[in-house]
Length: 352
Ligand SMILES: NC(=O)c1ccc[n+]([C@@H]2O[C@H](COP(=O)([O-])OP(=O)(O)OC[C@H]3O[C@@H](n4cnc5c(N)ncnc54)[C@H](O)[C@@H]3O)[C@@H](O)[C@H]2O)c1
Ligand SMILES: [Zn+2]
Image 1 (cartoon, rainbow, N blue to C red):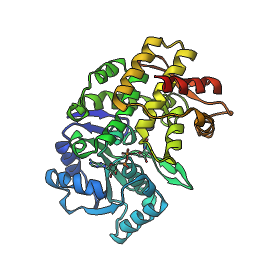
Image 2 (image 1 turned 90 degrees about the vertical axis):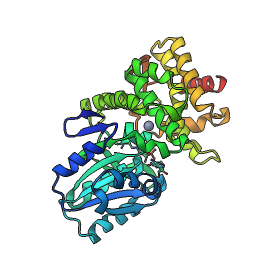
Image 3 (image 1 turned 90 degrees about the horizontal axis):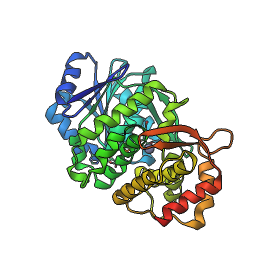
């Protein structure tokens, strides 16, 4: 097991059970609550029961899925805490993916003006992305993550054991954020990623640690996303538009699948705006296509994609805002480009 120390809390990565037990033994919480959904209740809770002293904790179960990341589910969680007479010394344990982590952290941070919580992420995406960085919240009025707070957990416990039951499509989707971390900040991580042959036999700890180190560095330098944290948006300007468009199509995409396509387009833009070598763009495209295959982008919908990009909250002064690559492992934030070039990048993807 490895420990990554942040300013306010530790992240434990690997076999977490000793560290989790040591944390629990050190605490004097009045009550323990574990937030799960039906999948993490079936697959992850038994491991918690087996390897920790949390056998008596109160379980709060919600339904899985982004559509439940809303105020109604928060209401349900706050009520469950209240009915169990949780006081300000209670601990909430978020056992699940990004939906559980974001919403459970938000509910804990607002219940009685804030009680402690820990994150035990169980998806690859939540391991490397949502469990670190302090962003908590829910979707509201059809806008993703529009209500929330910045707040940190007491600790994060990341164990790849949970990934064994995660559907491989979810695993592949989460991998996109690790690819992103390599491309924006760590060429060595990128090289390691290139050697992956089979997602089901990967030694995850060796990828999780460098990936988390990158996110740690970025969020500690710029916790509220005024500047360098924007580097984490690489692939997301085009990727979010593809994701939003696909949401209403017969063929919806998981977040990471859309971001993977977005990274190809934005790598192409990087060759035009920042002189990223063409060979690097070809290398990135070939790797991403090998893992994700090709999503059917259609020329006739380019205007839709652009409209979606222009509505994105990342833009300032009506300009499309991108993070681009000057090299593999080096990102430059606050890049902009005109619509025809963005369309060209979508065409580049189509013609690959
Ligand atoms: N806070 C942040 O900085 C941040 C960053 C990125 C994403 N997010 C948020 O994260 C959310 C997406 O997270 P996600 O991709 O983890 O999705 P998710 O939480 O919906 O989990 C995906 C699916 O996997 C199931 N599952 C979870 N763990 C499992 C396991 N070990 N075995 C079997 N099934 C399991 C879940 O029940 C769910 O059906 C979004 O709401 C997004 O906004 C937040
Ligand atoms: Zn993302």
